[in-house]
Image: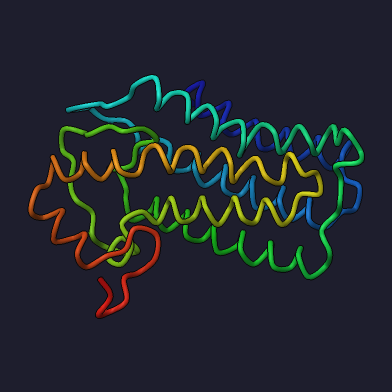
Amino acid sequence: MQPRALVSTLVPAILLVAYVLFADTGDWGTRVFVTGSLTMWVLRNRYDHTRNGPLAETRIDITEKLVLLAAAMGVMVLPWVTIFWPWPPQWVAPASPATAIAGAIIFLIADLLFWRSHADLGRQWSPTLEIKQDHALITRGVYRWVRHPMYAAMWLMAIAQALLLPHWAGALSGLIGFGAVYVTRINREEAMMRDLFGRAWDEYVRRTGRLMPRWRGSA
């Protein structure tokens, strides 16, 4: 097993054990977040090998690196820091049962969409703005209706995080961190696809939505 794959496998297991032993206060919102977050981590690890392959072009710059760091802090680091060290206590407000149930449903949808997006995208997936030598326009599965279902899954995850975590900083960090990625990247990514696929991309855009299906007759 490659070192990166080994780390990606061990970290979720270590976090789960540490949470159960040292940080589980009985709050169901946090329990749901831990379950959904680690599930998403395992799913990403399962498909991590698909990122490999020769590249034809990369558009990674300092802005891309900074927003990816912000996303990592907001989605993976700060939430777990607040789970283990919920300080200051004045910022802690556990989710109500109704809010926890709503967050659980949203996180379940996010995990399912995240899995399906990876499965349908296959070897074309990359965590950054890259074009592979054999890059193809994927229009099957969920990509038949939505151009960026993985982004949609991440937005749902960030919303669920905001509903579930009791610490305000951990709850809101996902929306802020992933929001930074989405706002700075989405137009650049679509421009890259248009440069690569030309008319085929424009036709694909006309029949699909960015994050939700385009209803028949909508602009």
